[in-house]
Length: 191
Image 1 (spheres, rainbow, N blue to C red):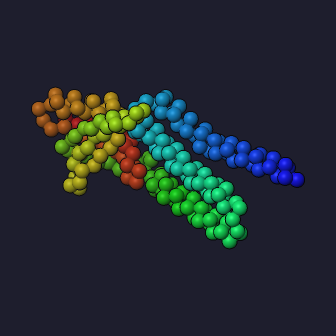
Image 2 (image 1 turned 45 degrees about the vertical axis):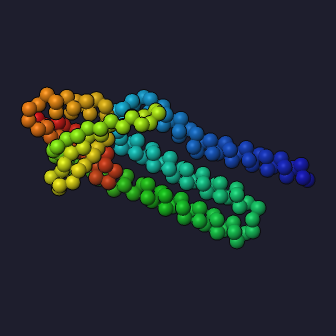
């Protein structure tokens, strides 16, 4: 009887490990492949929106893995502790899901008509502090008096820098973006 119980526990642990790999490992491998395929063009347009969805879904999957971990941790505890821990885990999953997906859902109506803004006093920044990724930004003053920053590709950043250096007049940018996620859909430099 004890051998059968140990065998069952071993199989259950293998199944949980496999489930965690499926939930976390496969999407991570897919994201690495997507990152490699898309280079630095991944941050703009519809591909940037798809990337934001994938990242948020990975966050939700991580919350689910935490709930599974809570369940495994409290497996040998009393039923009241189990119920409280699982309820807390489920509330955590729901809260994380709502917080992560809310901006995506709110931006869906803007996909066909993103908000437009003109930026002046352009600045460019490249953030190369990461081992496998570099991030490039264009910043400028909007008509609302606030500084706005958008993630762009290296090519688009360099294009703007060259225009600013070559022009004797101020260079502005016309940006179309999704207001809730901040994803830049189009960027046009104006000299």
